[in-house]
Length: 301
Image (cartoon, rainbow, N blue to C red; front, side):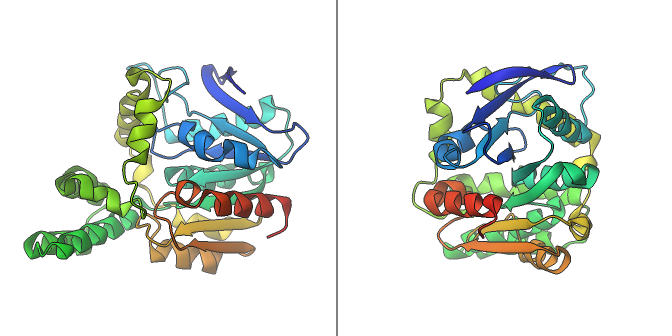
């Protein structure tokens, strides 16, 4: 079931699924700013059989109360909301699962409140937007090479090798290069033939378009603040609890540097490679995904 809970002065949508005495698992969504609805659609029923799944739409996102134009909002607000939610639910500790940008937030949350987290799961995470942008630019080059558009491929490769800041790389990748790919950009995120599943999910959802459009102000405030561009990959060495990294074989967001650093720095780690997935294994290999997450949280992986 889902409800609005007042967390630190803002009404946030919180979903709770499964038995109350089951091991709790918080899902931190990515996007940034897409909400938890898609995760609920693909995994709520699968995970809630043995876990107490807790989802939240971050402040200002989808089912949560909107941000105001003049409202102060920072990256750290997401971290503080997670911790305040844990306290409100009366939980001593919980496991945390972060997808994509949610993986970035899960690591920041652990760094701030390590005693609150039992285990941590990273699904297709980024810990460094610059590294992910470089990887996606190489993916874009591969798409152009498949159609023998060598000049465009060269532009992508050269852009990925320049010594630019994370902010500059992000701008080049997401505002210049990827839009030019058109529908082919979906090949960088989805392995299977159903490339437009998320667009279909949005169009078929019970929510009005203006709820989905809340993401724009959320993004503007985060990018204007700028903290999101800071690499936190070095924080992996501070992770003392059991940690699981889930990576789709065809995902460019979690590049090899992410994987190698995770395996080098995290002391008690598991790594699961999903051969038939891109950026969203929870959608492309849902049964294996649910089994992997459940077994890890229960201590059987």
